[in-house]
Amino acid sequence: MTDASELAAFAALLADRTRAAMCLALLDGRAWTAGELATHAGVARSTATGHLDRLIGGGLLVEARQGRHRYVRLADPSVAGLLEDISARLEPVTPPARGLRAATADAALRRGRTCYDHLAGRLGVAVTDALTGAGLLDQAGGFAVTGDGVTWLIDRLGVAPAQLKAGRRPLARACLDWTERRPHLGGLAGARVCETFLTRGWVNRIGSGRAVRVTPSGRSALRELLGLTDLD
Amino acid sequence: MTDASELAAFAALLADRTRAAMCLALLDGRAWTAGELATHAGVARSTATGHLDRLIGGGLLVEARQGRHRYVRLADPSVAGLLEDISARLEPVTPPARGLRAATADAALRRGRTCYDHLAGRLGVAVTDALTGAGLLDQAGGFAVTGDGVTWLIDRLGVAPAQLKAGRRPLARACLDWTERRPHLGGLAGARVCETFLTRGWVNRIGSGRAVRVTPSGRSALRELLGLTDLD
DNA sequence: CGAAAGGTTCGGTGGGGACCGAAGTGTCGC
DNA sequence: GCGACACTTCGGTCCCCACCGAACCTTTCG
Figure 1 (cartoon, protein in one colour):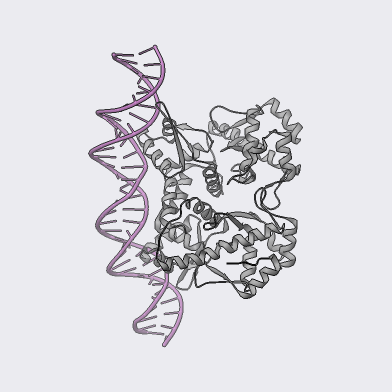
Figure 2: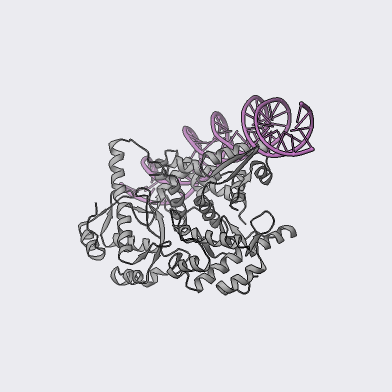
């Protein structure tokens, strides 16, 4: 039985503005250095050290030391899933009015981004809808990849069958999209799709953030594979 | 975009032993009075008042005042889902050695219990497996109720079709079982199944906790409906 | 080798919040 | 109407922890 102290201790990891900002930043699925996270969160490096110790001790993050750098990333996809689930609860109201710079950055993120290791934003939702429309994904009762969907992933997308072996992670998972307010495809299948799109150069990252952009070759590939035409 | 302060503020609601204990107690899906929760958590009533104010203000709980009582319960099923998701992360190791009393209480909980509003424990997992074996539930890629499953719920179990209209809540949802370490059926369908079992007297609650027991009539009903024989 | 850069350790400061008991408000039962 | 009861408000105490800067260690680069 879960005991209250454990739950409280776990929640306390996120119950601090600085640590929360770090975790949200790491939702991009990549490894950040301690210094980067300190700057991002707006605290001194010494402060960041302590926070990272706690987050790693609590099992939310893992670290990799390389030379004078300390790289940290989310411990595993389930952590990302949990953060997404919690964040999804927090977006009932839209925050208003910000500067132009924030607005354009937001526009790019709204158009397409990674959500930990899968696609999100209009792009992610569009792909999800196309998969559903083609009978490759079933949204009727929870998210599920259909038999045709598995075939499509292997034959058309070139995913190795071994890469679809679900361990603890579900093959398909509905991930509520912050900006679109509708679910997009997460889970193992979502990760494989995103990975394939990136390695084939169909989408690439804009700068160093989470935003992504569909390339010209991606545009034709998506049209051919999924009948997606009006991206943007 | 979720901002770090919001996430931290939300997490802070659970980042206290007393508030966490209250939320976990409320996972039984019923309404508790402020005094009961104070006793349960081991704090003064005045302290409990403050905590309940915060939890209600944060949207985790809702209250209903009746005369001199203040009843509170979880705000909605998604809160329960979130708590379950987080709790599931916290159970990697089994705590050892406790007294006999705790052990027997645990045994009852392991055998069968409610998990917010659906069935859990060996009973919950057994029902889930039986549904899957009968082709009523599809676990291949995420949880999904099959067409046959919907028919079964309506025709065999007598669930009103309107009761299966999914709003935001998914029809089927995999909920990781603490004791069995395997998923059982949650979501709307899980809730309807549990509700039906309780109202028909197929299972009833043991005392005032979350533990449930299969009745003799439930035993024959489950054998007939799902071919379940060895419950326990 | 020396300087620069990333990270850590350590002491000191300050604020938030968890707690209690006592007194106060509203409701129920006799 | 008078106690008993459930809950709330208030004042006061105390501890935890987030933060910083300065000194220090370690790696990298010229």
